[in-house]
Length: 120
Image (cartoon, rainbow, N blue to C red; front, side, top):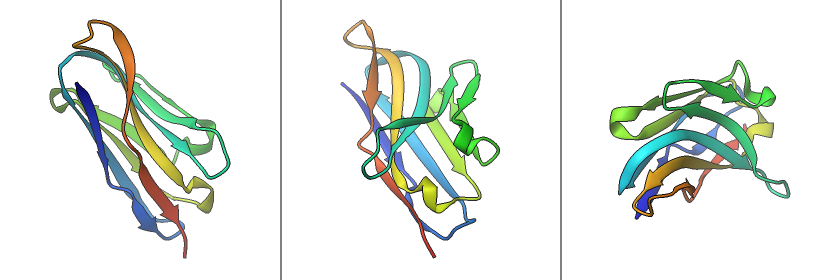
């Protein structure tokens, strides 16, 4: 079994910052990439940022220059530093990992989500 546990969401004022963390645990043999998605009310889930094992990153245009994704391979943990937050960033943020687990196949795993609210 693989688990992704997220932390760090909450309420912040516009222009503020939050840091999300996601730790993967369980029977993990290899992680190809980890990332963050978000889903706002009434909208589809969308990619926010992803980082590969070797550190290559990709960001949604809407967060470039404001969000930074990083990872600690030794801890199987991914982080999302979110700066200059805007009301349009309000969403549930989900951690994602594409990895090889006990099933001996590569597949996606998801965290249960953490709420980010931006409001004055």
